[in-house]
Image (tube, rainbow, N blue to C red; front, side):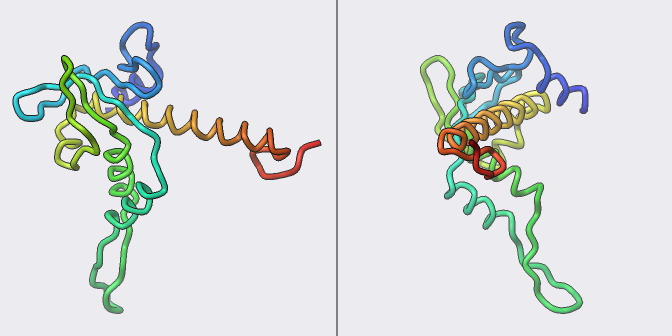
Length: 149
């Protein structure tokens, strides 16, 4: 499995092996069947504050402990909830299936396709973080928050 994840993260998009067409588009090698259509293109979008809040809520559950009930958050569930919300839509031959994906749909992706989607989402998040840092520099602060000369 690590080989699949490494391939998705490090392959050259020009060779077609990373599954990336543009910063917000991921080509699914195996595709995702929804109804009668199998989609091979997935478009990503930037996450919003609402996405984060809803994903945090979905990642929590009440459990019984020796001290009574406790609210527990699962980091793995939070990551899945964020990733599914980052899917704008699936596309194939002019047809689209709007996101966010359901957890069941996300779970039907092949290992190499979900690794490519995760790599695409990570790249998009990193690009967004760079843009935020550049904006801070223009406002006279560095990415650490310190004032610049």
